[in-house]
Image (tube, rainbow, N blue to C red):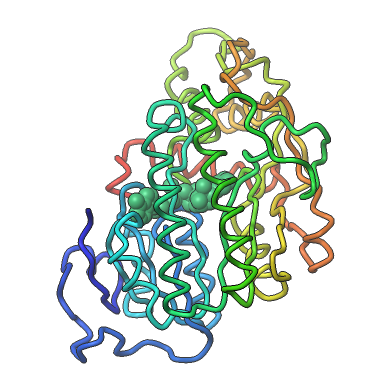
Length: 360
Ligand SMILES: NC(=O)c1ccc[n+]([C@@H]2O[C@H](COP(=O)([O-])OP(=O)(O)OC[C@H]3O[C@@H](n4cnc5c(N)ncnc54)[C@H](O)[C@@H]3O)[C@@H](O)[C@H]2O)c1
């Protein structure tokens, strides 16, 4: 399992100096802002984790990150050099989590195997990280008397929701235990249920966030938006218009996408005002067909496309859109429509297409 070390430095330096104490004062906390509250963000070098860490540090909180960088990248936090603590290690290792929870006031648990292709190809690994992760987080938090825990769940817990827009009271569902896709949803459902029930006696506050399709720059490559950009880039040489554009399903399947800045606004509201054992959808009411996403991507390349329908993903949902009434009552109001924010993300993926993830 991974190296365990706590260092108060930028993640790039921590990654290359594992075991060193660059702060020089023995506990690795020299130079940190001591105002605000002390957070642990597991999965803190990932897409959403790093955005949350930046916001928390920006608002004057102290932050410790736990990540094994299996999918995250320390370089995402390079601008925060010297302003957070970093534990490099595996969430499945109880000793790593135990040390990471020391002195923490709020744990935000995001470490998980995300990316739909992994749900199909590595379901046992997805579940291993999910189950051991939440178990270690709960046990260490309780031992260290951490008062608050936020668990990052997912819209996948509904699979095919019977009601759209879907509110937080709709039943969670695993339609087929034999379909490996549901390894992810099962891991999220179990994480929610153990956190909510341990939360009764052991925490002052436990909150659950169910994100609905967050997008932004540098979100990884195993998502529909970066995959559409890569596919269209590869089809650029097609001699005639419209370019035939193969996709999974008909293109009329819907999702609602929330821009990462809006998403983090929502998480901050839950951290500030969420109620004990409260479950919150963070997303938008803008339900869009996947073909509309493809059309915005195609606009960037200046070429018309013709959708070529393919078999749908095995176990994928036809429609998803969250009811966000509960979040709006906390004051949540997403600022960016897909049309406003997506072109910048498409441009970013086009411009960074030549870089391997480790070089970003
Ligand atoms: N991005 C979305 O739209 C979305 C939607 C629903 C739910 N979520 C959830 O939000 C959280 C963050 O998602 P993301 O998009 O940032 O994904 P991500 O893959 O970028 O981040 C997950 C992080 O967890 C880390 N991690 C994985 N296994 C680990 C292990 N064994 N030990 C320590 N760290 C480990 C990875 O290195 C990575 O940095 C996840 O729990 C994910 O399931 C995300």
